Length: 379
Ligand SMILES: C=CC1=C(C)c2cc3[nH]c(cc4nc(cc5[nH]c(cc1n2)c(C)c5CCC(=O)O)C(CCC(=O)O)=C4C)c(C)c3C=C
Ligand SMILES: [Fe+2]
Ligand SMILES: [Fe+2]
Image 1 (cartoon, rainbow, N blue to C red):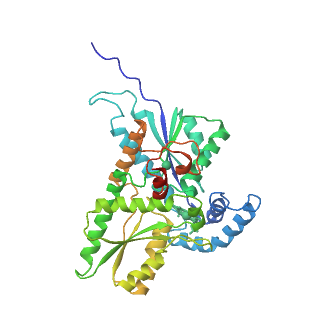
Image 2: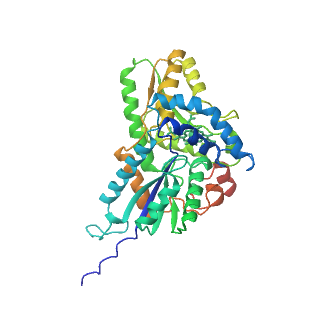
Image 3: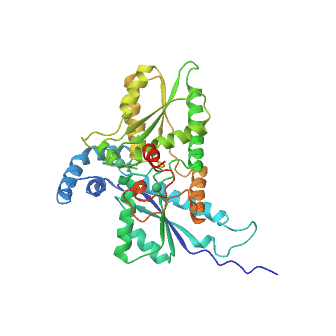
């Protein structure tokens, strides 16, 4: 007796989120205005925000424009994210769908998954992406923020923005979010392989007696946001632990630091500048890994490759090297595909939640998002 054919899986739209960046010099200011008027970024009473946000954006425009000018007057983030979306779609098309027995054909599988891109502060915005998802005829949605670590300022803000865009066009599809993949084994393994290649190259370029320190440099956050319960810093530390675990380097010299401070408030530290100063004092060379970014953009190509490199030179560091971001590295894309597959199988390693802002506080089903102190209290 032959088994009746399985129905084709429902049409799944995967929406990749990232921050977005200006696509031409004139876009720098409106991009910054979008960023600084986001309530997740500028936490002041609503009536002040539009004015204050525009004021901060205006003041930041010159410095930001100079940075973007170094990389051709625009951010490469959109092209790189579209390439990631295409690579993920291709990787998923090659994979067997969840629950399928080996050799079983599920009709229409490849046509049933499509990746879309929604940026938070510049085109393509969530509204445009939501319309594409609707016009394609999606039956369910999986949100995939390209931020391994959850922050209310990034993932939280993008998810809220997405939900608002869906409400505006009256789209109400079953939606889940891959919200905390900071120490996912596939992600950590793929990242460690990239770090290891850069480490071996740096080692080969240095005299044997020179110590090499890996600096895991993450985008910073105002301290007040972390104190208000944002799990980002804790998740960055978890990522570093997971990557080190897969690096397989004995007696590894390493540190965590935070870059890209853009407002006068106190930000979490140590800053990457301070970590470089310390490295100079300790007489070590450094290999910088941008641990919270999975694509190249202004903060890697300018801040790390130009500004901190110059600072390292000025400080007389014994060497300054940088690990490239994952971009469309096949192992990294494979790790994302595996996250999607597990989500499709109802895996509990992922978070699915309706609210956006406070992932670990609000929804109890994120197994790795609780800070150690909260875990102890819950035990
Ligand atoms: C881990 C990811 C990010 C966090 C957390 C984050 C928080 C955060 N950012 C700003 C202000 C700016 N960020 C800018 C650029 C930028 N930020 C991220 C990621 C995170 N931000 C990315 C990927 C980019 C690059 C965009 C690109 O080049 O395409 C900028 C603009 C550039 C500049 O002026 O230097 C600003 C401003 C704040 C205030 C914040 C947390 C409160
Ligand atoms: Fe930022
Ligand atoms: Fe979560």
